[in-house]
Length: 170
Length: 295
Image (tube, rainbow over the protein chains, first blue to last red):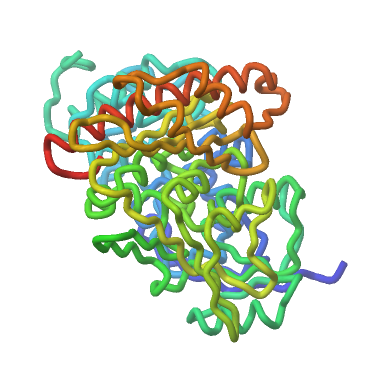
């Protein structure tokens, strides 16, 4: 077939402005990984079920495999690469994942990190039940949910400056 | 698992979108939240030649609440409608239904009107629209019409929307004072499509006795199945006549077997969930009467 028409789109990713010329059918997940080489965003099921590709669009968790890049003109996108601390160290959610051993193979982790980071912006001190509900849209095939739930609460502690031992509040 | 190529259009106004849709006719498809359309395209179950992206039309990102209704614009995300305090106060069933729509992440992007136009028999918001005597507002380049929910859902994944038309809003009517509502469903996994789901609106008199009730069932027919169950829920001293209720439901539903559940099991769920939903709606109506508000 003919070469596909390219569409211009401009958005920011982790605060950096980007301008892309991509085919209209380019999923945001592919634009991030292939065009911008931000391979922290993982693609699992590619039809919106697994949650591994979750990024933040204007602060709201969004499946990057369920949006076309060209539809995000003017958006502010945050990927797992943008969830660290400004000094380059790990952000609270990432630190909590390490503290609680909340990742095994790590494939699903970027989607959890972005989802939890946004969730804690609105719910600073979730109960265990709320933590479980917050991650209900993300699948982990290593069955590490217990530790991920603990990490949600640990991340809340770290954000609040309660820096006791891992899971000190549990 | 990648969509086939299409030509992308990003109108800057609703009128421009309507002109584009008029020009494209059958070849044009509206892209709203895309949470159903994009996976269908990725799985190559849909391959529209043109997409008209309405995500950049702020005039369609509206939730209007009046004393009689809540009107939701075409690009209002589920999450926005769900969180709108005034909309919840006016019609609690909106949030009760929305909480069952997929996962919060999907609701951040998916739109309520888009879900209605998609007309999936397993979707919650078509049932909510039907229960609330809702109306879909359709505009085209040179016409505007309103279609009642009862006429809007033509069949599975098929609405009354014609080529060239854009569903610009859906209006949900507020139930009378003394009403209560609820929405319950059962899915294999939390957030999956329901094997069966039921929404209910129950009316009560000042004594708290049920005066009328309707339910809308999902995943057991070609679209939302609206059933007036008043005969089975009135005049029983507050209790429901379960046998009569089951008969009314059985008369109207037509569940099918699939990989998730047998038709027989769906029928069982329809009976159980209907009774539970009605009971919860009745309790809320009574509570609301005491507090002097809708529930």
